[in-house]
Amino acid sequence: MSDRPKVRLFAAVELPADIRTAIEVVTAPLRTTIAGFRWVPAENLHLTLVFLGWLQPDDVEPVRQALAAAVASAEPFIARLGAVGRFPDRGKARVLWVGFAAAGDALADLASLAREAVADRVPDARPFRPHITVARAKQPIRLGARALDAAAPLDRDVAVGAVTLFRSYLGSPHPRYEAIARFGLQGGSAAG
Image 1 (cartoon, rainbow, N blue to C red):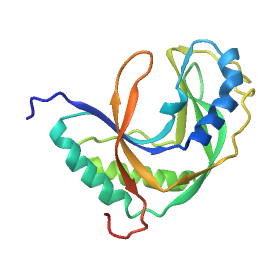
Image 2: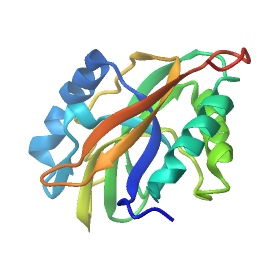
Image 3: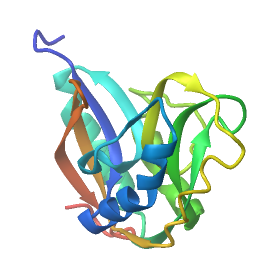
C-alpha cells in the first residue's frame, strides 16, 4: 500500500477542438433558456468510456498497460454526433448531453473493451450509453417537453482512433483533466 495520495482516473475518447467548439455553439441557446445547470467548459468535453475513480498510485501503471492492450484490438472508426438529450430520460433532469447518431455500437464495443480490461480493479456495471456530458445540475431540474429543442442536432463526424487515460483534479469552478496516456486503436496489431 502506498503512502502517496490516491489519483482519480477515467478513460475516454478525446474530442478535437473544432468538435468541442461546435458543441458549445449548438448548446449556447440552452445556456440562456435553461437555468440551474453548471455547464462543462469546452476544454473538458469528452466521451467517457470507463470511470475508474480513486486508485492507488501503484495501480496506475497496471491499469495503463491493461487499457493499452485491450483497446489495441479495436479498429479506428468514425462516429457521428447527434442530438442533445438528458438523464434521466423522464422526470427531473440531472445531466444534459450530446449523443451519437451513428457508430453507437462501435463506441459501446470500445467501452466494453476498456471496462473489461480494468474490471478486476473497477467493476462498472452501469449500462453504457455513448454521450458527451455538457451540463450537470446539483439538484434535479424539471424541463419542459420541448426544452432541448433550441439545440439543433450536431451532425458532425468524430474520428475515433485512440483512447486517453485522464487524471482528474477536482476543483472549483470545474475539475481539471490531464491526459497521462494515449492508446491507439490498431485493429488487432501489437500494442506499442
